[in-house]
Image (cartoon, rainbow, N blue to C red; front, side, top):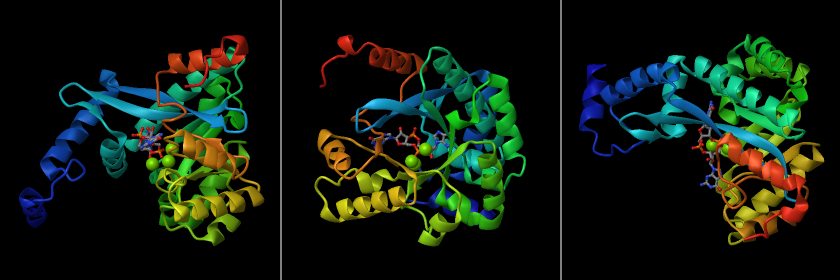
Length: 286
Ligand code: C2E
Ligand code: MG
Ligand code: MG
Ligand code: MG
């Protein structure tokens, strides 16, 4: 342990992703307090049916406004929370906030799904489906409106267990999406065996399809495969109009990315959904 501390301390390649142990422990302690201190909030990124640019779903993304450090990125604190078990109350918080918001959108007559990220650890938690079911009941949101995003890593850490947990959640009517698809080690046999509903093609493949032939080939065949298997396909990381155009030509795809809409406060999604209701007042595309 001391050797590791020393290694970390003298590490010369320390980056924001490789902070030393002491700092990590401090950040973790701060994160424990953050939930009660109201420093955590949820933002929402829209997903569009590229065929008609309508909003079909919204992904809930966690934000931490640290009093001293300012905004801490989820990629920096979610792994800490996963290692410490704090991920369980964090996910419960996000699920609750997202479903409360989804209930409001539904009451306003908007039919959009809500997507919530799970961490790998939830896929070995046999209590997950019960908690999801209770949260849906609490907010009177139908299971079919919820998508839970999981990663290949999460599935592969204990495939048999993940299978059981995923089946239990799907039995409620909740959809399961494989997030960041293509970056993990999931083989095609998992796609065949696993009961999933949606594939989210990772942005590292999507972002450059209009300029990189290899990326285009990979994304095209992934979309073909997923659609042929009857899965919904979401392309992440659409950062420009050319990428959106290229994707539209590849089939019935849902798009997410900065070109289409950044993660924003719930009220901004309200405005976006309201503008869809009044096409005469739709702003012209930029
Ligand atoms: P993710 O689930 O794959 O979420 C998509 C990430 O890509 C988000 O980063 C989003 O802001 C970003 N993004 C969206 N469109 C674009 C684009 O066009 N270009 C680029 N460069 N990025 C784009 P964010 O919010 O920083 O979250 C990062 C990761 O942290 C998420 O990846 C997810 O794995 C994790 N995360 C976020 N919120 C939660 C949560 O509530 N629970 C758990 N367990 N993990 C979360
Ligand atoms: Mg996600
Ligand atoms: Mg993703
Ligand atoms: Mg990601």
